[in-house]
Every structure is written in C-alpha cells, then in structure tokens.
Length: 145
Image 1 (spheres, rainbow, N blue to C red):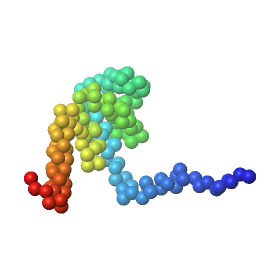
Image 2: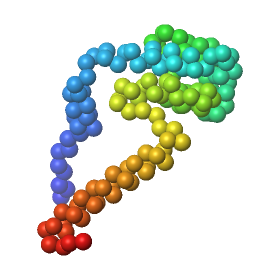
Image 3: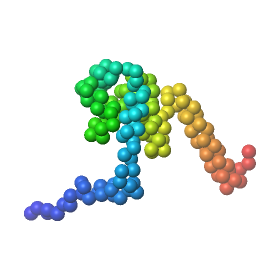
Image 4: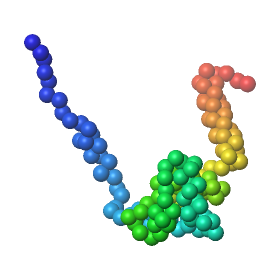
C-alpha cells in the first residue's frame, strides 16, 4: 500500500507576500533613466561602439554597439544589465550609476580605500558593546576592577 498525500504547490503561493510590499506602482520608474543618464555621462567622451566591444570582451556577453546606444538612450524597452553597468563602471573607474541605484535602497558604494575604516569602526563598536556587557556582568557578580 502506498500512502500518497495530496501535495500543495507552494512555489508561487509562498511568494505572494512579495506583492504585498508597500511600494507604489511606478515609484521606481525614475531609476532606469537616472542610471542611463549617469552611465552616458560617465562614459563620455568614449566611443560607445568601443565601450560596447570592451564590455562584450570582458563579460563574454556580446553587446552590439547599436544596441548599446539604445541602452544608453531614453527608450524604456532597452535596459542595461547589472553586469553591463558594473563593467562600464570598471572601465570608467567611477561608480556614479551604482551610487544612484543604491541611494534608492538607502545604501552606497564603499571603495577599497574606505573599507578598512568601516571595518575599524565596526570593531570599535563591537568592543564598546562587549565592554558594556562585561561591566553589566561584573556588577551582577559583584566583581570590581
């Protein structure tokens, strides 16, 4: 005898909470144009066809120059991929499009030069937290320094 149970398809039903977020329809439409504008400004005065060829070479994903022109234009039907944006930022040595996009999330770009300072600040904060916890435990135990 086999004990067959009815299985519920949870693949979509479990994800419906994603649609309940408090984000209004169209509230992120400005992101696309803003990212495109910053990409375009960051890449000027470089030849767009050369940039597209370079992105194709480093990513392994072909980007035709004519399509790259449309990606940087205002047509919402053509959007840059995250890989293309990162490759363009690497080429230009700037982070403007990424910074613009991350601002929407309340985040920002951290450069390699800034990273050790942030790590140091986190460690100092951890040490202060530990010192407070130790002081609390010492007072509970009646230990004096």
